[in-house]
Image (cartoon, rainbow, N blue to C red; front, side, top):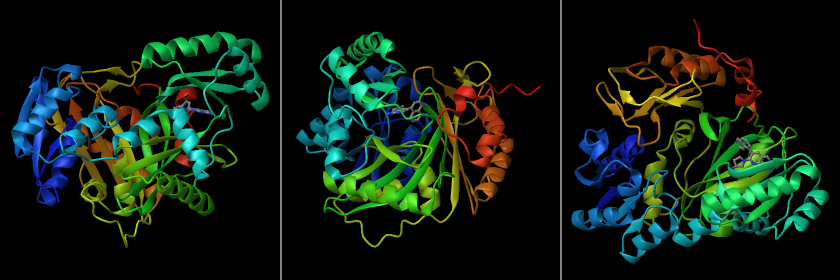
Length: 448
Ligand code: MV4
């Protein structure tokens, strides 16, 4: 087992990883920018190294600075958390060159899944259903027209280097294709330095349902059931839950099997997520694979009652997964609390938290690095807390979340707490009858 893990991250996830390391008897190293001097991850780690000024490019995204921190502290592994270095194949490669274990899959796997066309081709090989489409990169507008004609409109143009919604264009009819084709290429070239585009049939009002997976270094793979992440706004998830209210026993079996087949086919090592689009008829299609621990892993932890960071570290250390019971027992919902004003287009609201009281009690978990007096920096992600509730049923879970959010006091900045209170009263959410279009059509207002 590792003796010392450097956590190349900040905020709640850095704290989350430190907690598990402590329980496993592993020493921890925090890295921090000058904006995070007063952060809890710095205080709770055994050692802490300042790696630069507030901008991420000069601190949390600087490979030389992180590797220098590894060197001076003698850490034998790096936990990347999510975001920042988590899906940076070059970083994983440099770790390997230095003999430092990157806690996650190898650089080749990160690259393979990071290129969406390659990922899709790999899933076709594995026998996992994918959205009908071009099956590869489109060379020119003539080919785009041919493919769109064959699969039928509406179609969606996606950048192979994209993901998470970046560089996508929906095309409803033939005479809009040429314009969108050149726009998609241009956008992809500017954003990723790679203008490779592929085409898919556009699935109308899909659900985003993802399956948590784990694979060890000995070829054993398991799925840890699903999460419904359909409540999103501009590709930012707001709420996640498990089980999905749209799930049936048979669909769970089919999606779980497909996810395990995918993991086994690629010989995946680590925790990961297979993202699916699910249409109204419960057809499911592979969308992307995330090769990292995700923000919403906590939802799965609550329903299966296992520490996923612990499983992730064990697998990275070469320990076999075996005999684990990963069946979901409860219902869990996570509300992401962001320092944003939900009544002002979710505008970021950095500043000092003057008062902070987090909810407590049975079935309530709050993962946060915030406290009274904490300064929310404008330099980083606006998520300041995750409230995760668990209960026997979805109905009880919603009631518990409402109670928890009513207890949450955060003063000095705007937060998304009032948004979540309204969402929990929304009829489509309450009935479980929602899809990824919810946030486009639902107009909510500030309560007076
Ligand atoms: C789609 C789609 C419909 N049809 N692909 C958005 C994020 C990126 N991972 C892929 N996305 C989508 N791909 C086809 N063929 C609809 C979306 C989509 C979406 C997906 C999941 C969650 C929220 C979404 C919001 C808008 C569009």
